[in-house]
Length: 307
Image (spheres, rainbow, N blue to C red):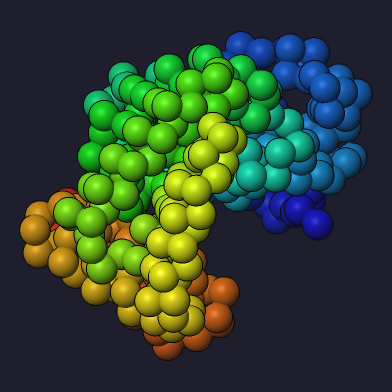
């Protein structure tokens, strides 16, 4: 339960929502909407109702703050808040409960990131927007957004395979199988040239390619692609091997001065370690992320990895 009856001198969540609403010149009716009725907003602000997580997400989006900021009142930097909002929008997209809400979140983040010169966040927001549009059945607009996103270093094939998979899917939906094949073949070529050790990503792209080839009516080529995927997967080994692989790739990218790519590999290692619940190695991975951010002058964003 949220702390509706905060101690003296502390701002309750209802009071915080009311303050933020008034600061933005919104009425309770303007803040309300699907999932959060006018009466619900009124009871929350009066301290008579504990808002659900879903309601908090909706209110945070309408008020233009992060979920954490709305829940706790903790002040964060613009970059941190943008990161939190991106993570929240990406989670909302994965859950798939409200694709239009996710789309709106990514559009707002895209404008915010562009206005503040945050190219990394802009690329992430554009990928999220493209995937949201694709899942909503708007393949043409999705392809346009994803094509623009791929121009960023932050969306290299080894860093964001989901972006390339989504674009290939959009091409397939538009009847552009040849473009999808060329895209995925180029991804495999780029991986072989830039990150030959990343067998996991190579296997993923080979699997994507086999599906497109099958749909195009070329089962022989699809079978070859599947065999390649199988060989790559056998080379990857278990989870521990993949963690070591991502760790090594992160160090290599850092040595080459490719910060975004290095951080992406570290985060993939963190995600796998969280799944294995290896607390010692997980702590090392978080420290690696924090050190990378600090060395790049982004100390504020290192905080969550040290918490």
